[in-house]
Image (cartoon, rainbow, N blue to C red; front, side):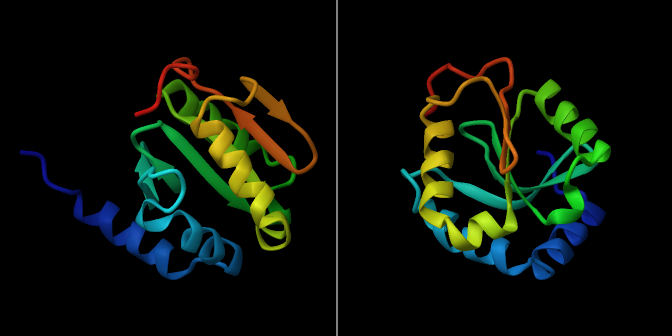
Length: 138
């Protein structure tokens, strides 16, 4: 049996402790299978990166970003890495999570139910689907 990597676990714990208000608010909606029965985890390691939220069953990563992430090349490289490892990536702005939470949750649900187009890029949302997107999510 494979055990956890101690350093990865420590870093994930530190990241969870430093969540911002938007991440905390979204976590209250995603935890305990509250959204469509899907299990989300926080600060999930994928390669050398940590996803803010991840649903392993649906291979969906949800990221909540501040304005410093606008047109961030690092995030695009990170997203491509996750997509190449069969994770679809959905990104929201902190402000949208705090002010438009119902719309954010509906968009996450649409991604879970495979109702989103494979690639969406607007000023307040980015979604990049992995190769397996469109297959049934448990």
